[in-house]
Image (cartoon, rainbow over all chains, first blue to last red; front, side):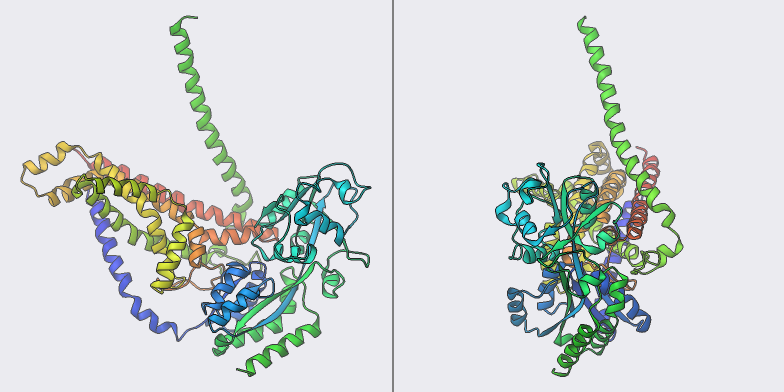
Length: 314
Length: 285
């Protein structure tokens, strides 16, 4: 019968205890090596894998990774709240301004490539490839409500309606696709099924005979047996995304680089520069391991050189 | 058909509609749990519970996620339960029944209906930035405390309301003060209802992700938190991270983590049910 009262007393006591611990903790925080990373969920698998391997080498350095998205991550980065930002696109004008305001100097480093795959349903017999112009015709804002049937894309295709699937408008993947295809980042028709979770798009396209959609090629590679890949023709012939075509640049314009941004302030901590060096020198093997495309060797070397020049310049 | 017959028909029809509705809910739950168990049960072993996150699905574990959830639950209870019960007692036993009181009452009910992400934004500004807690466990727990306080307060008030006035009057009649009456009679009698409110509130807190993402819960944390000021991740974050990965093995990991999360919720509800029954039996007026 005393239980509620007991509960009340215990919790009050515990509360005062937990408040008292604050002082002790602030003191020890500076001693331990912490690296705070935030940003894109697209780059996350690469950074996670690097952090995992880095931990084997440096077990006392705590690397934490958040997934606030490229934009959300830059907000924190420019306030000095994170050391490194994962970015699936280049930093935007407005973010450059925010970083200047926050007094944050930084360097952006390419760590891998990602190919965006264009997919249709397995039962789709008519699509052999899309040209970039056809994709633009489908996705540009003016197409909304007007371009709705397959034969409007190419006259030999059937007179039935298609449905569109794509990543959510807040994602870097969407930004990149619209930039590359429509010509303006973030500008597209609005009448498509959007999901932040690419596995939902996979299910949608696999279950809809008239579907057209796009997402990162890692999701296609895991679902090859239920989806049909549509090669993209940029005027030099139809090309399918693969390790090779993305790396040698022939799968254009739908292959994109992904980045990490490192702040100059953070590089003053030896553990951060150690981590970035480790990242750049292992990025090629790790990227392939988690389903992305490695930088060509030459480019990887030039990114390392770029970082070393920046690190020396502080 | 006579009127009596029609009424009887309606009566039994309603019974079957009711049964159908109940079965529908249960069937949905059954299908969901069955699906998750089939996908994830084989993946759960000791290593899964004691391993750090990893890029290799077969090596990845949920150690930091479930310990983060445990920390958050513990801290949230410590903060929200005393505050909530105390506020409930004040509002029900001491507060004057004025216009202000009814305004407060309406607004507490309103607070219970505010989307959780709004609490996340509030927590980000107050706890993370102004109080400078950063994206720490304490900031998360304080935010979730705000979120569940209204539920605890309403639960406490309802439970206290249900205590018969005769009990209070008898206590006063024997010369007890107001506080003695509350402490020795009202609270023990209301404990079952209060506990139900607390468990409902904590069960809500355990599944919340949105406010924690806003205040900065992380996806990859390779160490178990040692203090309330450490950064953290929680099970729902880990689950979301896994189910949105391309590799199927990660989806299996997600299902396995869902089973663990469900298990924690079931165990909590079980404990509450047990305690409530045990205490209820002891009360004899």
